Image 1 (cartoon, one colour):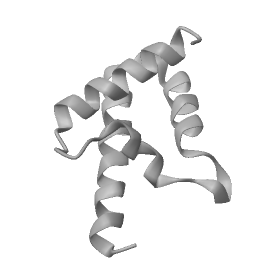
Image 2 (cartoon, one colour):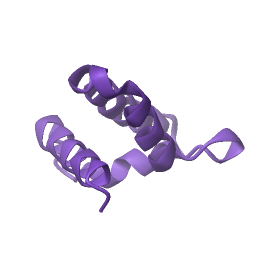
Image 3 (cartoon, one colour):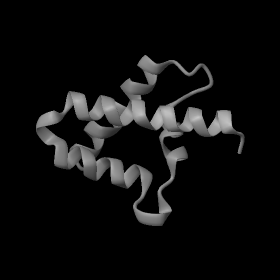
Length: 78
């Protein structure tokens, strides 16, 4: 994997996690649990997992809307 790809995956993950933590500061434990489910834990952390919310256009606003929708669905239990 090229360095540019790794950086982009890292930036995508950081943007998604920052958005969730800022928007749902009152539910931080749940946000962290959701993040752990997306990324995995321990030695099995997958930064590419956040890429599921991105698309070829790399529109950050749309990506964050998809992250928000996935979090809301996860909160609702479905």
